[in-house]
Length: 261
Image 1 (spheres, rainbow, N blue to C red):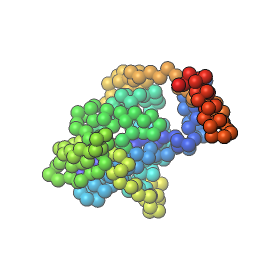
Image 2 (spheres, helix red, strand yellow):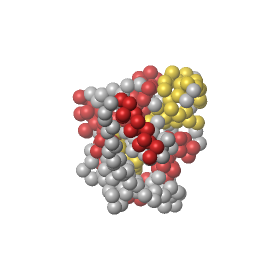
Image 3 (cartoon, rainbow, N blue to C red):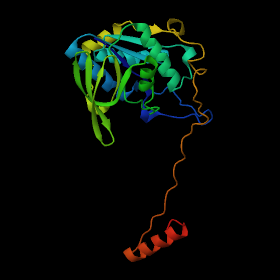
Image 4 (cartoon, helix red, strand yellow):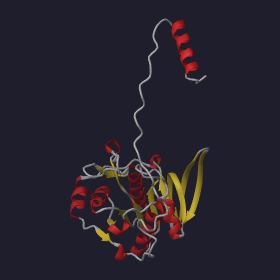
């Protein structure tokens, strides 16, 4: 079984800063991590590999330093890793990113299953995984809470919805986006870490992928972000003190003066 896991290197959320002039994320000197939801996807892939055999390949699109995120996945137990990296991909929105990743996946050959985290913590759009499925014209199961296994070229999964859950079966190939309730990601082992350090990471550039002109990078991105900013801190309120009945009277008066009630 050929399983592909799409991951993303994201800024550590506790360290995110925004350039007040450019309105863009400041990435220089900011620690980066594997998108946490993607680690659940890697774990789900490794469990399916243990059950059915085969190979797990992790793939990411990003700058050269994203190779470190791939190495962590190798240390967890993935077999191969692919970095899709080229300055021509800069400025890609979710549509352009999903298109580029879909084309990169197609260039790798046959696959049975694609797993993604349900969303990335920096953008929170949850669009890239489903977009990949659309570009590849395969079925998709989103917000997967449990994977029951694969039998007779069919996968069964539990999908979370607002009212509870759905039980879905789909023939392979299929793309699934994995929620954190699906499993607990394993920690990289010592042997896995040593393997990851020695592993050669394959890199695909714009010349290695059969992309249509005008459909990738900023040129192929229909989304335009006009402004990004950090909300100003809220001003502190006023503490009302005194006896209970006096404090209540003062509170009601204040609410009326502010036309809240």
